[in-house]
Amino acid sequence: MSDQVGFVTMAGAKAEGTAPEIGVGMLGYAFMGKAHSNAYKKIPYMIYPPPAVPVLVAIGGRNEEAVSEAAKRYGYATYYTDWREMIKDDRIQLFDNGAPNHLHADPCIAAAKVGKHILCEKPLARTAKEAAMMLEAATKAGVKHMTAFNYRFVPAVRQARHLIESGALGELYHFRAVYLQEWITDPDFGMIWRLDKDQAGSGALGDLGAHIIDLARFLVGEPRRVSAAAQTFIKQRPAAQGEGLEEVTVDDAFVAALEFENGAIGSVEASRFCPGRKNGMVFEVNGSKGSIQFSLERLNELEVFWKGEAPKETQGFHNVMVSESYHPFWSHWWPQGHIIGWEHTFVHEITHLLDAIVNDNPVSPYGADFEDGYKNAVICDAILKSAQTGRRIDVTY
Ligand SMILES: NC(=O)c1ccc[n+]([C@@H]2O[C@H](COP(=O)([O-])OP(=O)(O)OC[C@H]3O[C@@H](n4cnc5c(N)ncnc54)[C@H](O)[C@@H]3O)[C@@H](O)[C@H]2O)c1
Image (cartoon, rainbow, N blue to C red; front, side, top):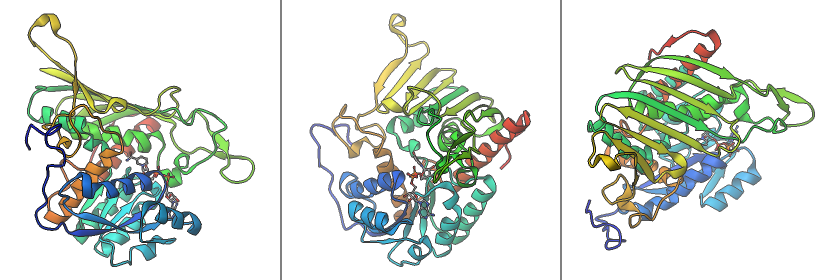
């Protein structure tokens, strides 16, 4: 891609031929349903030419009034109140699962069996056992499968991966990540599916921790052992419906130490009990030649430090605006410095999957497939087991 992109080449891309169409069936119309639908709509004109043009065939939910409204709002041709009916729709080639975690396995396995490609939100499943069944079904069906670890698709995060891959950081010593939010600190905040083990699998671990565990694997490599502590601060909350209190059955926060196969060590911590922290995901990688730091709330930037850089009087962490044409994904966007946002990670992620489907390219290693989702679930299980037993737990896939 030309270095000139930006002020001189806006709208310069030319399409040759016609992109194929791929019919999409989206399960869930709330947070992720909205984020994914937004991406499907942007892809045909922002990623130009697109690998495929997503056609919004159907959206699914339980409540007919709400799901029909969502279909109208996001531009889906139709809606379903039962995912079993949705996956029978022949117009759908890509099944996108943005439902709560307990509804990942059955619909994804059923969709794989009828030959649909699958995008499933993270965590892939509530347990490693459930994730393994999903991986097996998708592999057996020969469909493309992706776990929606969208932070792999932040340009600065992909740039960090390229720097590490090229050896720029030298030998890797440390990975350190936190993912901190504040939104359930209030004890009057009532029960939701995210606080119920049967529906969510785990709490801060699967919700936030899964993202930074994925980044640990993406950037540094496989953890071989974990040791962890977890805590539930508020053990009962106002019932979702009716009077009374319900048990919170997941972790409110966890912290874990990771020992990597390559000799690096790391820590991951997540909580939704951090007043003032909105979407505070920060990671740092330290190696023999330098360090990289990233903060999600400043996602267009990377902080880098290179050992021995001259002149020594100005040595220190540098702030790099990751928005040049030669930075990952940036040729699709704006002139340098005209920054992009969180929602655009989904544009990159789904484009990657469409390319994999149309051109038979692999989803991994730059995207996360169901194998990555399964390995992530193994690590999450090991963290919970360590927190429960007080022992260090080996990670075995
Ligand atoms: N990648 C990310 O950054 C990210 C961010 C948030 C959530 N997530 C993941 O996305 C998934 C959904 O989370 P969310 O925040 O969108 O949740 P949400 O509660 O906002 O939305 C869930 C959707 O699923 C629908 N739903 C619930 N039960 C259903 C059923 N029985 N049948 C059909 N539809 C049903 C709801 O109506 C709603 O539309 C979860 O797995 C979550 O972990 C990922």
